[in-house]
Each structure stands twice: as C-alpha cells, then as structure tokens.
Image (cartoon, rainbow, N blue to C red; front, side):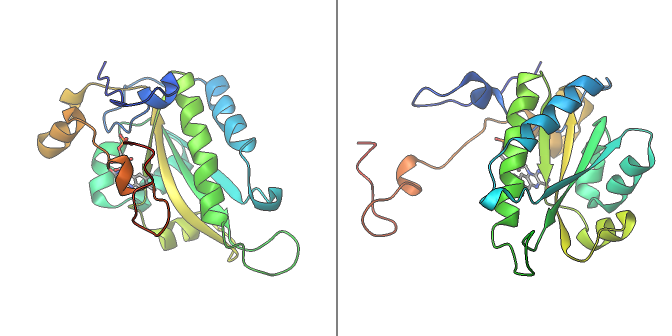
Length: 200
Ligand SMILES: Cc1cc2nc3c(=O)[nH]c(=O)nc-3n(C[C@H](O)[C@H](O)[C@H](O)COP(=O)(O)O)c2cc1C
C-alpha cells in the first residue's frame, strides 16, 4: 500500500496524518455500510445557521449517475478517476433556507462537510480525492440541478490502488513526497503577513 503520511512537526490525529489524495484506486467495490458512514459524518458537520447547504449525488461504478459525473470531469481527471468505484458530485445550496438572501458561506460549509466525510473515509480504510476540474454547467444539466444550487466539487472514493496502474507524470506524483507551506507563511499576528511568534 502506498502510504504518504504527513511529516508533521507537531502531533495530530493519526487519521489526519494518514489522509492523502490518491489517483490509483483498487478494483474493489465500497461496502454500502461504509458509504453510509461517510454521509453520516458529512451530515453532522457544522454549518452557518445549521443550514446544511450540502447535497450529494452518489454514483457507483456501472450506474447512470457514475457515468454522468464522469462525463463532466475534465479529461485529466477522467484519466485517473475511472479507477474509483465511487464518484460523488457535491452540490451547494446558494441561497438561505429562510428568505431569498444568498448564503455567503455555502461553499465553505460544503467543503467542511467533505472534510468530515474524508476523515471518516480514512477511518473506514477508504480514500477520497476531491476535484475542482469538472464542467459545472454539464453537471447541473445532467442531474437537473435547480437554479439555486451550484455544483461545487466532485469526489472520487475507494480503496487505495497500486501506483503502477498510473503512467508518467501521474505515477510520479502518486509517489512524490507531499509538501506544505511553513507555519509562518499562513499563521499571522498583528498585521496580515506578520509572524505570529508561535513557531519560534
Ligand atoms: C477543492 C479541491 C479541488 C481539487 N481539484 C483537483 C482536480 O481537479 N484534480 C486533481 O487531480 N486533484 C485535485 N485536488 C487534489 C489536490 O491537488 C490535493 O488535495 C493537494 O495536492 C494536496 O494533496 P493531499 O490531498 O494528498 O494532501 C483538489 C483538491 C481540492 C480540495
């Protein structure tokens, strides 16, 4: 198994450490019970005014929803995501539940629900690869998404596969080390951009 645990400076939860976004998935279906747990985790995610603006369209390899989600992916993503047994389209409700006003944080809330889902996936031995590279108009048309909802991302979900399934650059990045900014590049105090002093 291709493990790419985060090389942390400070201790964090094992599941957060283990999570990463593979492009090679195993040819093994995901148990329905596990999928239920993933959506349970998303369900209990916090959201602004508890509006829960996330909606998910589940595609399982071989069904129509899977084909429609796949069809809207950009070519680069189609290449590797076809090994994933499950594809999910994440849709956000853009307006508030009460009244007509726009929900300024619908994408934030949808993303947070996916964050919870992806950590629960790790807990179930599953991996999630999120994608922004897809045609939102096509997705909306394929599924009859109402005007007040917007496709946000697509998720590829499954058991981890073998990097040898991939070729060239895709295989290289599957095996490459993961990297991140230093703390002082994103944790500030005082003015924007100023070191917090927490990491000295
Ligand atoms: C909102 C979002 C959109 C992404 N879009 C794509 C995508 O279209 N194609 C892709 O291969 N990876 C995509 N990724 C995966 C990121 O490249 C990946 O999360 C990042 O490189 C960090 O790697 P890690 O998740 O393994 O830690 C996306 C991730 C997020 C959160």
